[in-house]
Length: 184
Image (cartoon, rainbow, N blue to C red; front, side, top):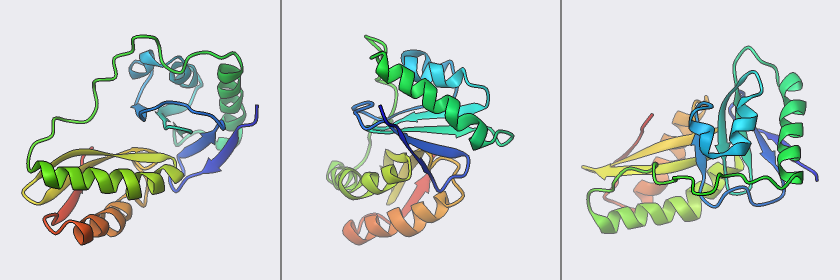
């Protein structure tokens, strides 16, 4: 099995591409306790210096502590991911509760449907290339609230991604959108 790695715009996060489906719906874990539903994420959190794991459709983004170096962590992360997939272990535990996540949607359903369509078709694919994801939280009084995940959370260019990239696109295609704000 060959696993490709890519740097991301976030120097604390690296993207691992195992050339296979990882999960159907992206999942983010901030610590080992949250990772209890994923044997893969749990195994990655056992590596000293790992502070975050994001499972994308066909990639895994791992965030490290500032005190750690990629040249030390990368081989252990690669070995852990490779072992997991070559042993054909499940990425998620059977019966894992995936209901936690995006907030209850309130507001104009037509506008929200257009926002989600743009997120799915144009924005998420671009953000996934950098090892992250963007989750819709709500639309209220002309403001779209989004949560950045994976490599995008905490990235030095996150504000630019939101304001220059995502906000401009949403405002162009959906006149009711006046602003985009990040939810942490």
